[in-house]
Length: 123
Length: 473
Image (cartoon, rainbow over all chains, first blue to last red; front, side, top):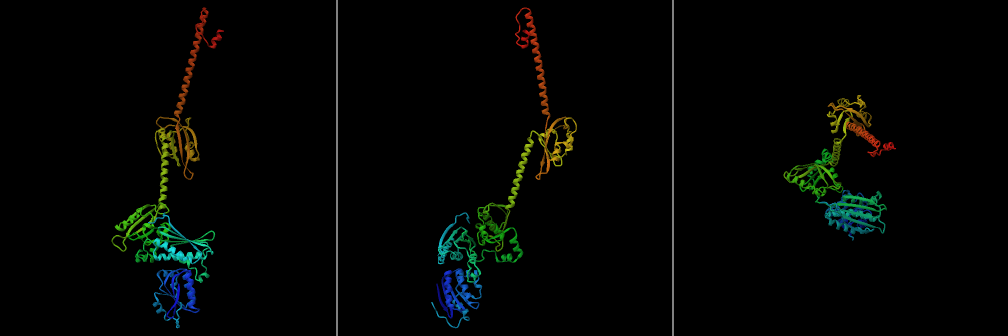
């Protein structure tokens, strides 16, 4: 289940449950809508994400590709298990990907990069 | 303790070709893996790795195809097989660009063993193996102290020695769990353990039968008492490949503790081939010795005299009967000296040339010589005829290596012939005398009968000889 929202001016998607092939394609769809054509900043709250496999990883790679080298994809609250899988495919080593322990850390780190116009909540 | 012979516990699950089925498969795998005793983190890995195989199989299955997931639970591992009707797709660059192709690396990283099999009719079987940990492997608590690992890894000479020396080296903690092993040692193990990180595993589990063979007790003793232990040819039957032999040195390793229980360092080399080879040679030598004894017995009890001459024409052996006939034994004499000592002659009394003797001819020509008569005079007053035969002896390459000479005293035979002759003559003489006497008797009787007839008396003797009757008529 993916719930779209925002953290201040930054779009935020909360992912609950499993990011497998089905969850991954849902994420791609929702994120594509939220980002629009030139979105460069996105936060994913994965603290309630219990599982990830190549389906979810594919979606993350896809988002990074869409946002381009200038974009930033922030992951919040990634569990140890999920993080291990991200490590295997080398995601944390990508410059465009950031890992944050919680929303506060993400907020502080990304304040400078955030777009000036706030994004309204939408569910 | 591992029990490789135990029947595996098997579960299986049939899935429709629908990606929504993968969640159900993950729950199934989670239940099986939890039951097996994997940690929660490892259960997660198992779910991810197997999901990759299952998703792949479902994606490449035809619409109404089925994917079968089978789990086999063994004491030391969980094996998961995913079988689908489609071909496994090798990720192409184009697919990678669309963020595919991550499944295979994930499976390879998360499973302890991964194999892909293509079915003859296009199906694919993916086999994933996950070994059951027997000890908590998190952190480096079980491994060697960092200083030692650093020494081994950073020092080229040390790492070259530990990795390339043809000996297995391992270090066990006081609980007999592996702290470190070199590559060669893992190569000694049964196949199922060669690819496993042994750190933290109990020695007795990794080396099946070690407990029964007493190795665990020995290692424990070394750790607790600080003693050394060496075995030259330790026979071990625990490995799947059968009986093996080992040279084994184990000693206490006083790294972190200077009082027991210590770590144990063992240096092991396999000597199976050497031992088996040596046993084969010993068996062969024993057989040759038995064969030789048998031959010696035959020669010694042979009623015929036997002499063996080596390739140089020297007498190297004479049997008991030959000693009796010769009356002396001088081994090492060449045939010239031998013939001279025995005064070997032809039956007609002329000298017997050494080059014509059977042994010389067998040595020279490599052929057998039969029934040559001669006389010998051993020098103790005896002189008797012998009948001699000889045959060449060959070495392993077929080269004449000596000759065997067989002979016997003919005088017994000659005497018997003479006695028979004498007896015959005696019999003839006796016979002749008997016949003469009989004839004389008949003549006397005829004379008496004639006198009786002249005196008008009846015949005194009824003579029934034809001659007599002829005379009477």
